[in-house]
Length: 324
Image (cartoon, rainbow, N blue to C red; front, top):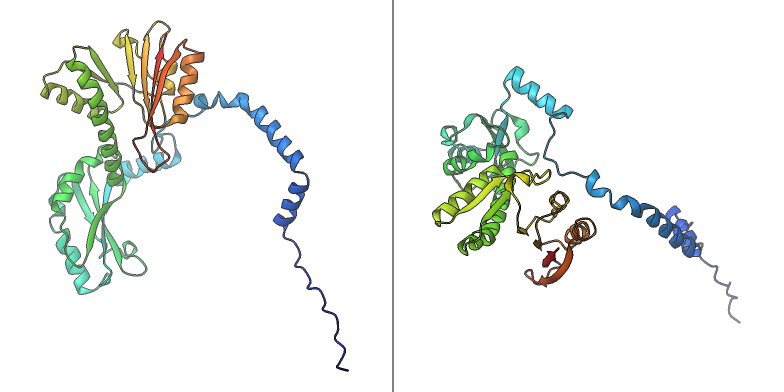
């Protein structure tokens, strides 16, 4: 007979983690957990209607913030420029500090000091902190004599004076570049609104366009003038709108951003307009604003449709007609 084999011993299970124990507890009491969530959501439902009043669209900074006061103090006391553009140099083949890198960087920005609104330049050559740890990226700072809001005005002149010098990739960053991107998106929205408002004017309608940006309103006026059309465009704070100075509208066409037009629909008078066409790129904010129009302002949803303008994505364009 062969040697007797001992029975295999079961392997010891590792002790369960805290989250595993919590998961087992929740599974055993799943009905109680679901019931607790239902009660919590029911209790929170009355607060949901107050959300638009509690949340307000803001800006990048508020004057009363400590950081804003510190920035203003630095500008007043020691003359720190209010805005600056960052010129970024990057290379995969040479390192900052090498002759080739520095010669290319100097050639790229040799005309930058003469660009409009540029008041000074801080080079990475005298500021080691402006060089990345791996030496492949560095940046110079071009100080501007413009406020942050007006700083995108300097971008065309700066771009015209910056050269692409191999082996470097040269680009712009910083606040003005970001604000410039935002402005480009806003201008795209303006072009979209002009595609709607100006054709209406060609049919003899009296058109008033309301926009929050003064620069975009000026562009819309110039576009109407260039096309020989009579259309009025005004600057209005769309988050605290006052439509009374512009008279009674028979019809209103809304084409807001994804945030919707909650403050505008709340500000609508009881007597006018009689018809609203609401074009939306976010069905959730359209539903929210529709609730105010129907339940508070006395409108009824007369028609609605969806246009799939963004194939293979979850986004659709919605159009709704409200009448009263």
